[in-house]
Length: 226
Image 1 (tube, rainbow, N blue to C red):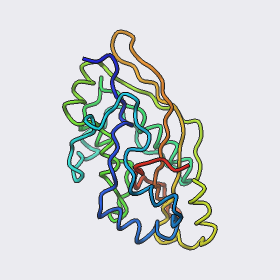
Image 2: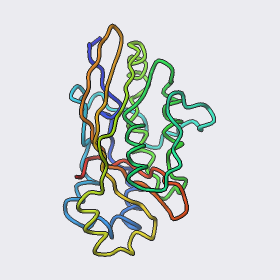
Image 3: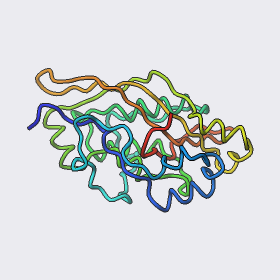
Image 4: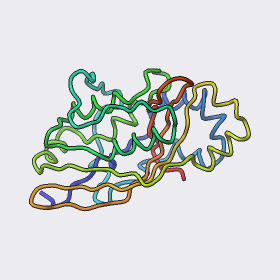
């Protein structure tokens, strides 16, 4: 057993084809037409843990169904009632970088993540979010070592390409009200016998914030756009 275990944020997957096409067709084509964001959809992995490798990625099916939130979500916090995209994205990033295998099962982790998702299925890319959770075997090994992590956010912002595209066509966002937000921060990881460490983290999220509604999570980008 190695003395260093990967964090949840090291398990990214590319956005599912159908959801990516839906988002591109209805939202992102208008908002993220710049070349810098084209790679945002087709790239892999983004910000990985130094100790993670492709062989450690989750083997779950992209269409894997998460347990309903009613099944319990362990240490995963409930989504906050926030109507501002950057503030919600910062809360979501902190949630994504935090977990506790000591009191939360993998199914509970998935249920907790599911509760943050938009209920509008044509915009919800569940595969990009559930792909943050290690496969059952690895989760079990992490639990054997009491691995847990706490995320802290240092800042959140709209990427430059998103701001430029929005400035050029402000009305484009009114189709789905999906905002692109990049969040930076740190993750403190700990396990048995005093093991642990801290690492920088960054993630780009697609957040849906319709007028007069609380924000929800739509997707996690496969790579970070600053």
